[in-house]
Length: 110
Image (tube, rainbow, N blue to C red; front, side, top):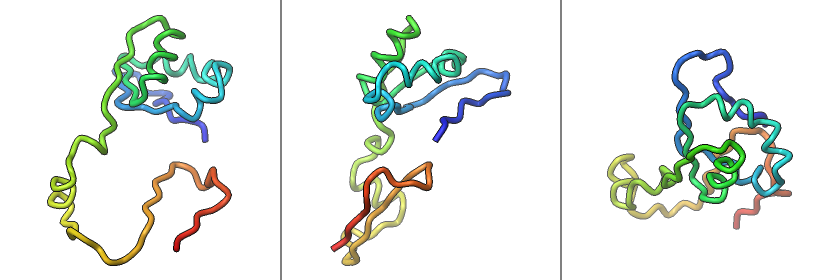
């Protein structure tokens, strides 16, 4: 998947809690492919310290580390905000992906 960088947009660009952990593990050469697009953002923040450090070093500018948004609410807040049940007897897996390809060979649900 090629990341979306607001190409063609001429206003202020802010990246909030981005993640490049899968790319950071591949190496700097992969990051260099998207570095020009990343540096066009006015403000950058990442959820992983390693990613923020890598990009900060490559761009020679400050990059903020921010808590993953899923941790901004505690368990009770998630339940009340989304009208969830305290305990659901059904077994399920939630998969959130921006691609149609899974990176693992398969998912097993027992």
